[in-house]
Length: 190
Image (cartoon, rainbow, N blue to C red; front, top):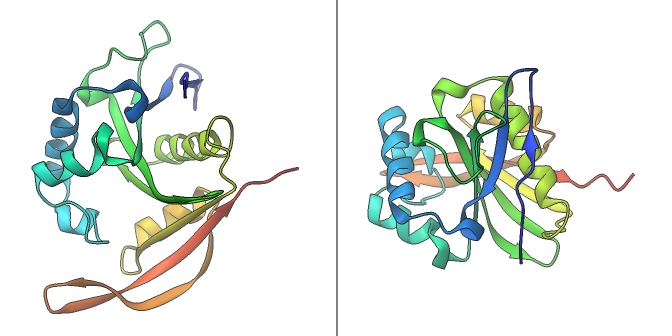
């Protein structure tokens, strides 16, 4: 499956490119740098509140090309920059999908603090649009986050998610349980 990333401009002089990690087979060192940068800004167990990776080795194993997950990088790059040539600091964030079944998948987003705001919403909407079109053709994305993470819940809504409810005691960290807010984004066929 060949996928060419499309440039996206959220503002006049700004340029965002969505790059599928698995298709491009970037070096695993890229994943290591993404993880390190994420850890410098967040506590990894809070970022991956669904029990996902907390160590570098697990992150590389779970999101590398052999993982079966589709990982996208949102990259800020001037229009004359080749989409495969970028600095790690130009990565705005990333999204991954897993549990792909028929026409649906679970969607997960992570954006770095220094790119918060309209950049992240525009980038996430572009990633969703890519998943709803060729070659992926998904029609439903399921989103869930720790209910205490109000920024993540608000972000999901700004990206078009409809919140459908809350599941009690979905996440566990140590001896504490946390509720999960569940939402979905449905492809608009009109």
